[in-house]
Image 1: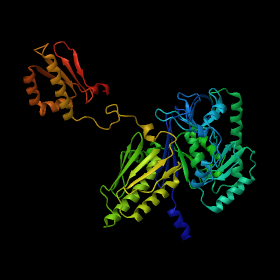
Image 2 (image 1 turned 60 degrees about the horizontal axis):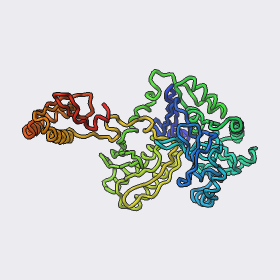
Image 3 (image 1 turned 90 degrees about the vertical axis):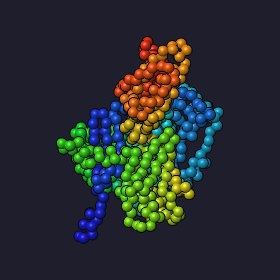
Image 4 (image 1 turned 45 degrees about the horizontal axis):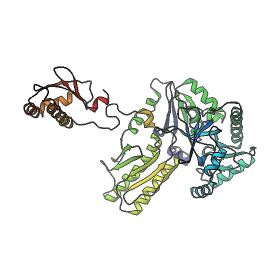
Length: 531
């Protein structure tokens, strides 16, 4: 009795909170009330990742070793030559063996590619990465259809178990189940992580649903002309049930009745127990406020994230990489030793970074600037902690050991735009720079341009009179601190200056007009920045 109570007290409470609205669906995973994962989707934007399309090859670029495929979207899809021929499935292999077998894969010459896939030829592809920035979607001919417990891979004979299922005993059990399933000869099957602990009957039911989906895809493949969509992933709420509703989830709360009924139906196909975990939220407060998700999201997406110990993380997203800086800040460690205090901050920092990567859906190259650690043992300890924290991440990651400079470099699979890119746009005021010119800098520029204009026009207009239009903050600087400089300028150039403030203008905007005629003589680039 004691041990049972102890386990209950120490067990993590895991909940999925779904906020489904007409313009946006948001899903949050909480562990003991703490936000651990977050995803969002806009129903008005068609989801293409995971979709299977019948496309038409537009052109082959040998220099890029890629084909561009029209799949019916604004931008042609990018198909690398490497992904144009079916690949041996490598899900069940470790990284070393995966790389070894990939290196042995047959490479086709440009002439062979042109013969097999000439421009205008139809091709069936699946989107692996959404369009990001100026790049079109990334596609492959290696198709897969996910179910609740299984992933079906058409054209492959491989049967395997997700590498994230580490128990040798469980892996052996699942492989026996796979061997007994009635699978067509040209189909491969992979057991998903959610399959750990699932009953044999659940796999059979899941396989029947996947095969039914594949039959629909094949029928559409034969009947529909290219370009067209053959298969599309379900919406975020349904995917949350399919991918995240595991045995350790206590409940799912959703605030939309229609979605509630729909996902209960989906979960009911899995089991009655799964169906009973889904509840309709009908409280007065917005569901994300009720479960304290909104506040946690606000804190998570700040540039500066404070750690419990007083240290902090600073996130900067650039075109090429994500830079994360670790600072001790107001660290209040338990140890008097500086080395031990640094270890504490770095350890907490990498655990929080692993969480932030999931929350923000950060992908690509990530560089983490840790506080310098002299001890190799401490570096190894922080690296090991980070690797362990990344195990729960569904995206593929590759982490290098901490360098002598204290940098930890890694890559994280990028399938879609980051959450920040979906939620925010560049500030129309600073255009994404994050800063604007100071009033002092503006004053210097104004005086420089005025002197040039007055010198140039003095020959044709001896009694020159200029009006300068500026933002009120800049005018305040001119009046309070730079008035004498402007008086001296008038005397030197024998002209007259008047100033006018316009609060609707950009801080970096100023214009110089001929006061007599109203002719615009100069306008700064700030006029192009908006406001």
